[in-house]
Image (cartoon, rainbow, N blue to C red; front, side, top):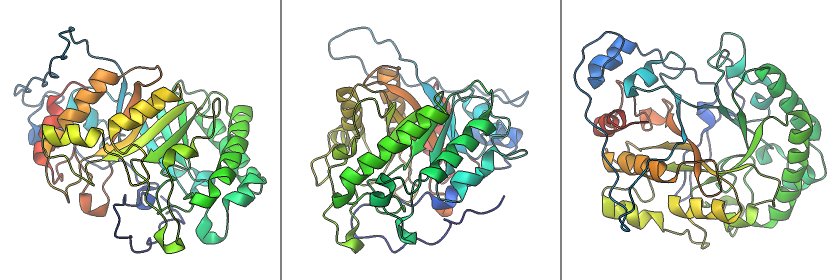
Length: 371
């Protein structure tokens, strides 16, 4: 598959917590993992293979009020290895409800490689989270010019191609435009003096999306915390100020990985839920859900996984599952969908459901739960 022009090395990261770039994930196809191989490795029932019993899913802790717990419903998915060939679904014992792909640079947002004939998502008809690039500050573009309409033609072409390529497939396309904009690694990062221009530009994109592909949904996706553009001398921002206004967003979203800090215990999970970043904005998953509720929108967790560089911590997987079962739904302040980031990059540090996983205990936990 043609590589994206954005597959260039990022500048050395600042000493502050940061999220690794997604740029090398662009255009990655599903891994060629044999279903039977996964079944042997995970000890699950797969297409007539061995029928070892699967451990029962862990039950969420009782509600403190004593109210009977009724698991919620949400769309559960994954992206990366094993999705297209069905081995991921076989390994966890349930179909995927949704997946994700990335076209996150100026070339890829027009070429849309993974949706083309013969590519990974050529025949995918379920809901799909599509991360589309926006601008490239590193190539001299700016949110100020975007606010004036300088890139409307490119955005229009991208939306038109996405609509036409998707065609009559029944699944909803969730457009994650300018995702992780509060980080410092993408060409559409928003600095503290660009917030108003970003909001104006977002409104322009929303108008185009509603005109060209109204059946799609527009997703505003944050990194779990702001990471300032230190190289540019930026002061950083409270990511909540990036919310462009009512009627301009359909779904709030967060990309949430087990890092900075990593969760090693139930106590660590509870502490992480209420963390704030240095600008006072929510950093914990509960805080992101609460913000979505305040703006009247559901929340998506468009990317999540453990981080093998931090260690193998199955409690994180279990508590993510518990969170989804408690808060799933389509309403404001509910989890609409979640996508496990099973993409083989950065030395496999995000791979969970794979014979190559560096987090075997987390993988065993994931495949034991009811998704």
